[in-house]
Length: 419
Image 1 (cartoon, rainbow, N blue to C red):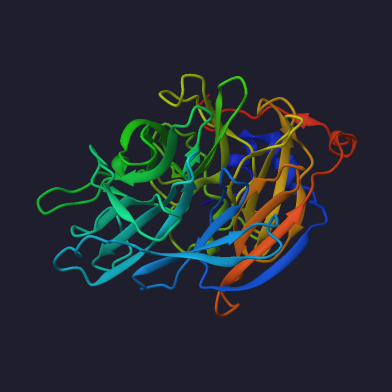
Image 2: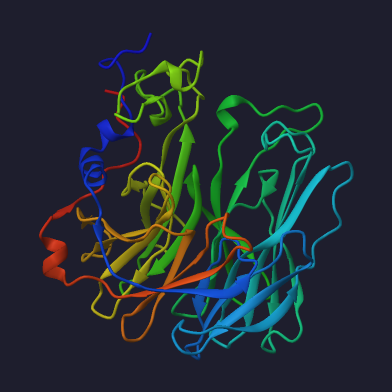
């Protein structure tokens, strides 16, 4: 029987983060623009070499995706191109299939890129045990402004079975090469089951050095990473934010439980999930937060993730302002839906205790910084807002003295100590 004194959650192992997110977020103003552009699902945004902003959307079940473009810093948007998804034939025997764009990119030469996904299976909802579950990701490319497109080929998930996760944009590095992080996982196959300890996902990192024409895998950001975003710093270090989510592992503290077993007042309650054992290894998500990590060798190896945000504060992006400030806007799902942000003045080593809230409307924040340090954030409107449209926020960060009033913290490695 679970009692109020014999359990821990992620918060007990990250007290600074827990304190920050127990406090009421500080409202921060932004200009909100609801466009008439639909259907919008998990939009990503990039700034092209000409300064224009590009994002994407498409109807579920459609065969094309739309590119939307703004030349006035996100104030107004127009359809720029329609791109065929160029999906491969659906696997035999599947009863559920969906195809959509995952993210956009723009190279130094102006070539447009779209990452596409085909998700298919038996419709059981169990992507690890479904023997016909198939996830594929490929990147299409246009060198003529979106008039014509070519398929550059499917990304290779080896040694995993499937590749394709949630939103992630294609990043242009200073020297012109491109990096793209995308989720991969194993799945059962006839005669081969996936063991409990193998039911984990991870972001694989792909690279192109020929303007997006070909892609190869160079690294992984590590187990349990997804919805990752990259930011290249002047030092050459690459920062990454990632949705870090996993179930309980054998090496976790025995008393670690998922926050879903807590009631509205933060007390442990078995009634939250019936007769499920809250201490069981493999049970629920014990961590479902945003982490930061970095690479000092061009993306080949990555540091251990460090936890920055609270429970259900996910789908983050990274932007850097002209004075070096790093800003992490992200979505939240704990009090409705909306966007919040935290800041770092030392390239991601420490982060603000202050948590600022932009709004409580829409999901899946993704952002870029303009030359005047205005941040443009794109989201989808709430799912009840039919049809789901592109929603845009324009805002600037608080003065440093306002942020510093609550101080800063140094994130701890995400894995709880077993001692």
